[in-house]
Length: 430
Image (cartoon, rainbow, N blue to C red; front, side):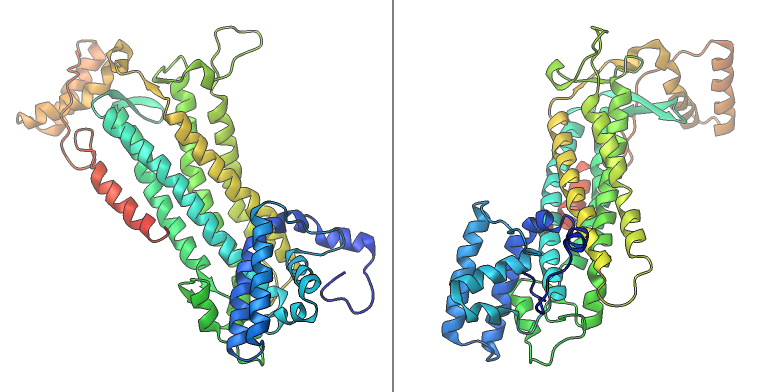
């Protein structure tokens, strides 16, 4: 049975094609559909479209459905098109004609919009929580290993001294920029579309300010057409934040894969967190970080996928938008899994704190020698030439002491200032 039924049922092949994975995906929206419906009927009662006794019965029945959902027992039955239909049919089965009144003043268009806004708002909070835990881990590692030098590279060639504190701290601050994207996406999602109906409003005197308050939205999409236009735009904003975080994680995963390699040997993990080879008994493979890298590289394609799906749609609702759920729902889940796995793995990372003692890294310290000569009064170009000639003729001998004091350098990581930036952004979401 369909909410839009006019006395006929569609061809089964048509139904399978148009419904697609919606029944499975909609299960994730069920709690939000009930939440949105509760706000909507409270508003309907306030404008006289429901009686107080009807409201009480509907709220009680919706509460019971919410409990079924929380127990994991909610299902969308065969022949029922989507979560909205299932909830309304359940209400009608319990309450009769009262259940049919719940849809006054709204369309499935604004109903799914509010469900998705509430869903994405929660998903962003979950992502932010996982990002926060990884950020804290990176900052703790940065402080723990701040005095342990490691090679720095440009063009993948040995360049200048870095430190494990600087390396871990760099990814922590990179997450700050990602959190800016996530906070912006939260602002986009945190707007109430309920009351826009099919995209052109309603002749009922709907109190949209009331539903905005009840659903704890920061504001509303005022223009009803703009509210419908936010379908796809909201997902795109969230997907860009997802891709930004995924980019940071993919970069970190690549670093770890390299640093675990025997040619580098900068970091290692307990045996039980690595995998082996079927024929090479010495192998300890970074499979976790390779899978993480692959998943995060794939996640970076999500904004483009959404852009292509929505690129040439005409104004108003189009069924193409249903496919956004196929893209976004797995993406947020996969990102959270990658973030949590990264935090778990880094809790067990071991660093090689004597790596720069290896003679292959002697040339890391040439710039330090140039700067030392400049501080003693030699012009920079003369100092550069002097050290360059020593490297060329083999007389250069490194001084492995490093004295960096400016903000953000090896000796002054500014981790507390970075944490302040992160906490400020996190507070906009949490």
